[in-house]
Image (tube, rainbow, N blue to C red; front, top):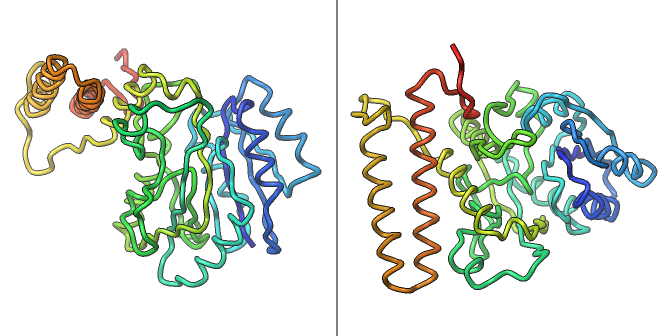
Length: 315
C-alpha cells in the first residue's frame, strides 16, 4: 500500500487541479491520500472535502504554522511500505504512483527517491525566466539531463519525492523550524533537503527516477522579479553553514567573509548595468539577493535573539 501526503495553506487556486490528477491515478494498488490543511483561511477545506467521494482521501487539520509541522502530523496516519510526498500545486501524471511502485521495488537498497518535476506555466515565461533564473532553486524543476540512478540527497525535492515507511518507523521527522510557514515570506528554504541530508548522514541512500512525473504549477506572481528575488534571499538562508572549526571575524555582528562576498556581488551587479546586458543584470541581482540571505542567516546564527524563522526575541 502507498500513502500520499500533501499539505496546503490557502491552496484553493491549485487544489482542484491537484486533486483531479489524484483522482485520475491508474494504479491498481491500494493507496490513500492524507491532505493536511495548515490553517487555511480560504476555500481549501471545502474544496478538499468535496473530493471525498472520488478519492481515498483523509482530511487533516494542523493549526501550527509550517509545512513541516503539517507533514509530521500526517506521518502518524501512514499505512503501507511507501510514502509519497508532494505539494498542493502539482499535477501528477496518471501513472505517477504506478511508476513509483515499479521503480522503488527494483531498488531495495535505496530508501529515498525523487521523480521528475516539469513546469506548468500559468503565464508565458520570458527568455529571462528560462535562461537566467536557476530553475531548481526558484521553481523546484528537475534537470532534463538527470539520469536514473543514485543521486545527491540535495536533488530530492518536495513536489515529487518518496520515502520508504521504515524510515519514519525509525523515528525520523521533518525539522519544523525549516521551510514554508503559513503566511510568512522570510522562511529558510530547504525543508525537504534538510531531511534528506540528515537521512544521508545516517546511511540512507537516495535515487533519482525519471518515470514518476509531475508538473509544478507556476503562477503568474511567481514570475515577477520581486517574488524571484525574495526566493533568492530564502535560498541564500538555506545555503549558509557556520564554520565548525573557528569563529569568523565579524563586522557589526555579520561574518566579514560574507560581507566581502556580498560586496563583490554588488560590484558585479553594478558593472552589469554598464554592459546593458539584461541577462547579466538579472543573474547578478539574483546573486546579490542570495548573498543577502546568507548574511541574514549568519546573523541569526550568531545572534541568539534571532530564531531560525527570522523572528527577534524581545528578551
